[in-house]
Structure formats: structure tokens, C-alpha cells
Length: 79
Image (tube, rainbow, N blue to C red; front, side):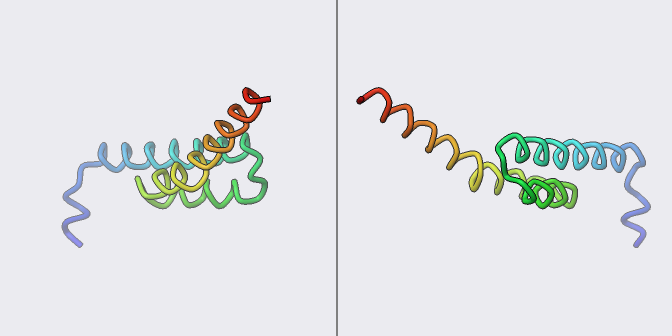
């Protein structure tokens, strides 16, 4: 337990700020993408650790959305 006491306070504050920003960004972006109640899941998970929630969000939400947008753009160009 002494290892946790040896970590400087400013580092704890920085970690808290990073987690809060990550959770807020994940929640707001998921809301903007129309994810409904799962936006809360992304936000809460973003508060628990870094960078795994952000990486998963980018892989499972942002990437498929971009693929759908790209496919829709390609279809509209062909018509």
C-alpha cells in the first residue's frame, strides 16, 4: 500500500482529469451519434480506466459509423 502513498498528488489530479475528460467525451459523442441509453454505458466506462474504453469506442462505434457514411456517399454518387 505504500506504493500508492508515494505517488505525487499532482499525478492523481492529472489521472482524475484525464478520466473525467475521457468519460465526458465518450458520453457526449455517443449521445450525438444517437446511441440512446448506451451513451451512459460509454460515459461510465470511460471514467473507470484509460485508454481501453476509448480504443473500444473508436473500434466499435466510430469506425462502423464512418463506414456507413462512406458507403452511403458511394451509393449517392453512383445514382
